[in-house]
Structure formats: structure tokens, C-alpha cells
Image 1 (cartoon, rainbow, N blue to C red):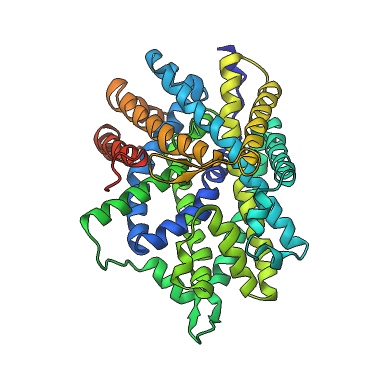
Image 2: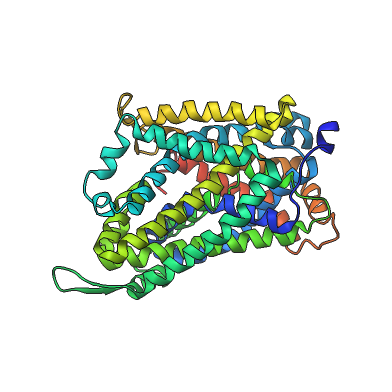
Length: 468
């Protein structure tokens, strides 16, 4: 009880919403959402994503934030507070951010590299074939930039909930939103004539993005789009990573939880949509439909620099703004990932924030160095159960995202839906006197629909349902 009384809290709902939205708006929104939208019929993916965000995503987000506020604990200890026999689920939930942070910080270092390249006028070099591969396979530079990014993240976490996480979110998130809107508007105004004389515009690319393409759609294809949209929600809302439990534990008891959750959903969905507006029209304009097939690092660090190069002098400015925006997004997300671990260490071992943050920084640094070495000294190729060829970073990503996160989400649904019952979450959400507007929907989702969808997603992600 002494530990709980000393626990910090967000100063208000705005600080909580911006911090939670900052966690949600990360690399997954920027390099995965646009690719899936382009691959899955544009508007069809958007419609399914929106429906899932308002049902499936809302259910998981509400559950985790409410668990955090009710227990005033981090993921490692919160599940045990809800039900003593479910403590192991908290261990799994804490493992997810422990695994994610090292490779996320490595990628954050890559973003720093590209931002520096565009700031110093080397954007043209960044667009050349082999630039990205040459950088990530280098011995020293990726490790140095990993340290730069990781220490920036650690500095914010060291400063605590109010002076660190909340204060940085209030500055970074408005800047990020302005950059996203600015780049998205610019992306819609561009035109390009290729070598064959074909003229393409950003508005044409925008139509591809938002208008549903149902040509040749089968039942199997529909379920593929559905599962893609659902898997994207994990990244978009930062659920099943322990993050929202940690942030929920810092929410004051008199805060309107339902209103805050709605605001997080709106903010995140808006930015995810704008990420597509930023990227799809620009890539289509300069590279055509075939250029829209890239995702992940290849989209951000290979395809987009080529797009910026094709823009001429304006491309350097757009490159600076784009990678500054990506850095902000990566930074706020990495802070939330580290905080989930640091708060877990504090609650479990009753140690200070500084000590917990130092321990996690050392763990993340060691893991990050291992990831960097995976592209040179320790390079190997391993085929994952889903058929993808992987290195160390990909294996860590697969374990955390494809295996552990669905397990955490399924376990959470069973615990809340069938063991302690949904009333525990509903009562917590309504504690401040606010009405739980989607009460009946929540009960149906947490008990029946969400677990079934999650089990199907889990079986697909580990390669059991490759035919879907």
C-alpha cells in the first residue's frame, strides 16, 4: 500500500491522452498501415480497420487501461492483483516490451541516421541503391546511433511521469501532428511524368488509397484483409504490450476514463489515416503501383528516399520534415515501451525509478548491440514458421508480435470475460460517474468475438493457418 500511495499520476486527461496517443503513433502506423492499405484494396482495409478500432480495439484498450487504473500497478504485477492465479500472464506481458525495446531503438538509430543525412544535404546519397544496406551492415555507426536514440529515450523515462513522459508528450505530439498534416497536404499536390510519358498525381494515389477495390475479392481474401486490419490494431493502439496498463496506472481516479479512451482512438486512427495520405500518393506518383508493394524498413529507408530524390530540391526539405516526424513518433513509442518495463521493475522489486531505468537501459543496450551485430558479425538467415526469412531483429519481432502479444490479448480476454467477469472493468470505467456508452458491445466483444478473432490471428501468425 505504501508503494501505491507514492505512485505518480498524470496531471490531467490531456497529458494522459497525449502520452497514450504518442505511444500508439509509432513506426507501425507509418510503415505498416500504408502498405497494408495499398495491398488490401485501399478503402476496404480502411473501413474494416475503422470498424475493428471501434469494437475490437476499443475493447482491448479499455480493458488494459482500466486494469492499470484499478490495480495502480504495471503489467508484471497488475494481472496478479486482478486474480492471483493469473500472475504468469503478467510475466508474459512484461516480456513483450523487454524484447521490443532493443530492436526498436536500433531502428530509431536508423531514423537518426537518415535525418542527419537530409539535414546535411546528403539526401541524394540516401536514395542510392545499397545506401541502407551499407549503413546497417557497418560495424560501428549503427551502434553509436543506437546509443544516441536509447539514451534520449532513457533521459525522458529517468525524469518520471510528469516531468518526463507527460511534459515531452505535450511538446512532441502537437509538432508531430503538424508535420503529418503538412506532409500529407503536400503529398496530395504533387505530379510527376515518368520516362514513358505517363503522368501521375498525388490525388490519383489518394483515390487508390480511399476507394475500396473489390475486384476479384473472395471470402478468403476478405478474411485476409480482416486479419491484417486486426493485427495492425496491436501496433496502432499499443495493446498487448503492457504499455496501456502502465499508463492506466497513472490515471487519476476522478478522470473520465471512457472519454479519454475515445480521444485516444480518434487521435490514433486520424494519424494512421494521415500516414497513408502522406505515403501512398507520393509513392504512387513517382513509382507507380509497383512501388506501393514495399513495407517496413524497405518502404521507409529505401523507397521513400527515392521518392524524395525524384522531387528535386523540394525533396530535401520534405525528407527533413518526414524523418523529423518519424523520429518524434519513434521516440514517444519507445518511451512508452521502456516505461512499461521500468514501472514493472519498480512495482515488483520496490526499487527507485533511476535504478529500474538504468537496469532496463543496460538490457536494451545489450540487446540492441546484438541486433546490430546480426547484420554483420552474427549474420545468418532463419526461416520463420510463417515462411519469412529472418535475422536477429526479425526473430525478436516475430516472438514479441506474432507469438507473445496474441497470447497476452487472448489471456486478458479470458481473464476478464470469464474469470473475474466484465463488470470489474465496467465498474472501473464508470467509477468517476461517467457512463460506459458501449457497455453491451464491450461484454459481447470481451467474452466471445475478441477471443475467437485473436485465436484465429494467433494461428495464422505462427503459420498454422497459412492458407488464410
